Image 1 (spheres, rainbow, N blue to C red):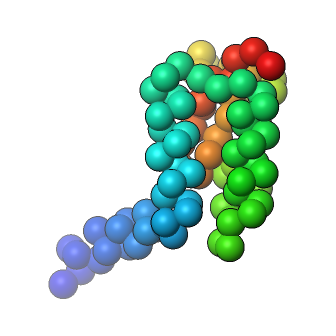
Image 2: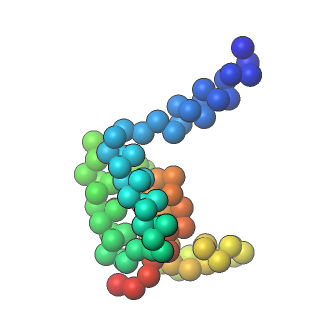
Amino acid sequence: NPSKTPDKIRDNSKVFSKAKQDLIEMAKQDKKAGGITKSDMQAYIDLNKELPDPFPSNKVRFDANGHAGSKLPSSQNPHGHVGSVDHIPVIGD
């Protein structure tokens, strides 16, 4: 049944190892709490590198200057990305 194919593909793309899921859950909580420090973001980067199946480096990164040309305020300010969690505000040191 072709109508089931997109759901199956979408579901498979969201299946992460337990360690990756834990990293994403921590990032979601930090984003909800209002942000993280640069040290926190470095800890995410370091933790990701230690995973048996790390996210690609472009999926766990710190954008110190935001994204040039973006109209979204969350993109223009310093922020981090952790897996599927984007634009985590980076505040303080």
